[in-house]
Amino acid sequence: MLSKTREWDLRCPRALMNMFPVRRGYYYKVDRKQARKIVRILARAYGVPVPTVCDTAPDKGYNGTYWYNGERIQVHARCHMKSVFHEFYHHLENKTNGKYDSNDRRGGASSYAWQFADHLFDLLRVQLMLDGK
Image (cartoon, rainbow, N blue to C red):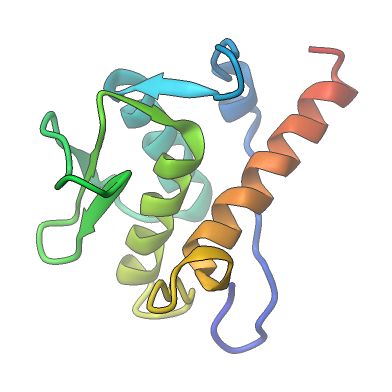
């Protein structure tokens, strides 16, 4: 969510649609190699530096973690695509000096980073359906 206007700036590049993972059960899981590709695509679309995606898992109880000082993302080896979107959104806020608001303080549906992840994932699925994939 843009901090000033409180509107969403959603960008869903074609490259992201082309690498959409195969659905396994209910979840669209990606490995770390795919997570790295997702953050490269999104970083290019938003014009920010690419964060590092670590090979280590985040602390227990978390789907992912973004380290502001190190500009790195930690996600599980097989995480949901939305977890990558969520952590990238924290990076986007960091690299744009607060142009975007990724506030997670109350968690759940109130989290702007999770709302971004949900909106982007829904946009991606709609675009894929329209393309007949």
